[in-house]
Length: 296
Image (cartoon, rainbow, N blue to C red; front, top):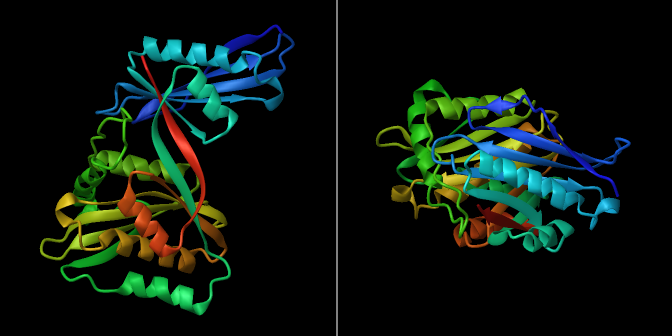
């Protein structure tokens, strides 16, 4: 089979990186597959790129994916990257493809979903009670979209709660957050038409944010919402703040978006604490995904 791989121009550039793209096609122009390489440029991740390869099911095992991978890896090397990450659902052709092409498995993730429709009063009451349960010394605040100005500095500082998130052998780096980056992340969600809601735990002694839980909902308020991250600063752990914030996120989602079908979260298998929180709140595992890494 005659095959051409063409680099495509992708004008999308953000404060965190840019994307390269390739199209595999027959000589007559019929598309067979594509590859996208996200090249990270934010501080702490200048060594990293993230890869996605897609091949039409009828064209697999014909070196379409291999050719796309070769082009993307060459570009990653040219950009000075030392690690390329890629993710695939466990047991799928993508899983087998990555393992067969020199990627090593570095992280296992469990995806779980909380259905929101058809709740009985007991279940709804349990979530509401968990969200409203007092936690002495702390209070919950929430906002939609951009963080309020008076909380911006401490919210940006609270992002270091994710620095020790279990990532197993992944060469993910440590993301440096400041107010500008926090605002840019919120704008990116809004620009694509989605709705960001953040619940934060505030230390009542000084009014600073010490934990957060972010949820992104499709702009129409239907389908499934996606949890972006829940974290608590190390010095404030052990008080049940993660469970508290996530329960409040669920309560707000049900109140603000009654047509929302469910909430989806993904958690590293080694993150036993957050998996226990998800289990306690009623999230049901749906599938596992594997994170692979190619060391350049």
